[in-house]
Length: 267
Image (cartoon, rainbow, N blue to C red; front, top):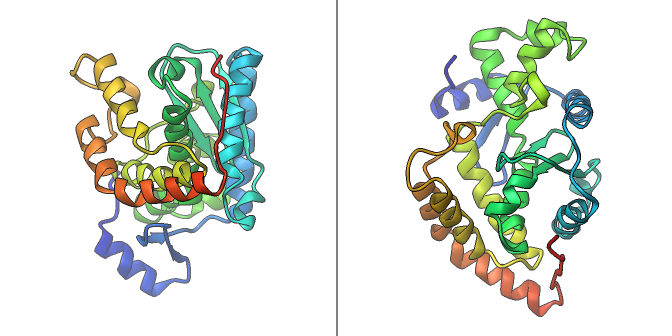
């Protein structure tokens, strides 16, 4: 299956009333309702919690503290989502976000993100996926180009064959609800959105670069882990973050001057 090229998305948007723009101004084709997606996210999150062990309370408080600080700075309408975050006991350095505001962080990520600011860049990135409707865009684009809209309308259960296929389009895997990678464009966009989110919450955005330097060190400068195989290269991500750093640092200084100084004790 292939993604629509931007010009094709623009042309399709001109013919149907299902288009909007992302927080960075990209044109998006969104065919699913928020209610449909949020319910899918809730079901997948419930499945994930049933099948993977939850981390200890100290880790849970840590990720919750960081997420709360970022969500508190979102516009009122975005705060209405059912924002929930859980820490899961897993050595895989991964994190995810599902439609509806359901998020997870594996304890393996805490070995890579060694400070609250570095973990804030991870959580801000995942929140960025939700705010930019990347799951809806992925499912809508693939459905419009190859699957047919009947997949969406005929899927009544996440456990059905159509439901499992749709979960894959939303970035969700069937086994353990593990989230599959979004496109490189989505990952890069979530990096930029997350950079601004962490900064306006009072987390140091320059630590986002350190996070990816840590990731490079953890992989020995070689190929990224399998879960990152379709993500932008680590060097490319650092370049993208640095290109937007001046704006983020200005937001960070303003946030600190306004008294936003989060303090989340690391477990």
